[in-house]
Length: 151
Image 1 (cartoon, helix red, strand yellow):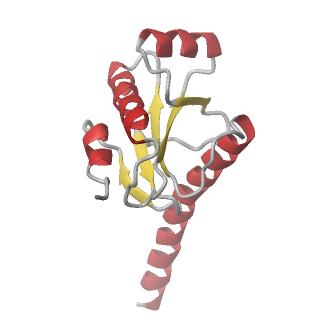
Image 2: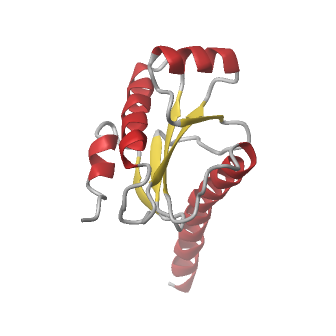
């Protein structure tokens, strides 16, 4: 009985550390590539996308819209707003730029997935502490963030 509890505890901690690891790595990447952005008390919404996947590109547009509107809003889990991050599975930077420009997703911050463990993740919303609020939404990313607005 104790073994089952221990195994369950180890599995839960490894899952939580994997999520925290993605949050930490994205935050480190943003600090290195965009030092002008203040990450303190901000919710971080991430969408993993590919130029060949229309659904992921549609989510890029939703995330871009949410980031444009709620960048400085008071949100549950992010009292100073949010940051929208687009993690590209494509390593071709020119293809990424062309696709994002074509889709009119210019506000959200684009990064390449190098060094980020995004397998099995479509999108994820982290609060300012790195806790996962929502993960792998099929649609409604904008609506989900809209529900986090505090009044």
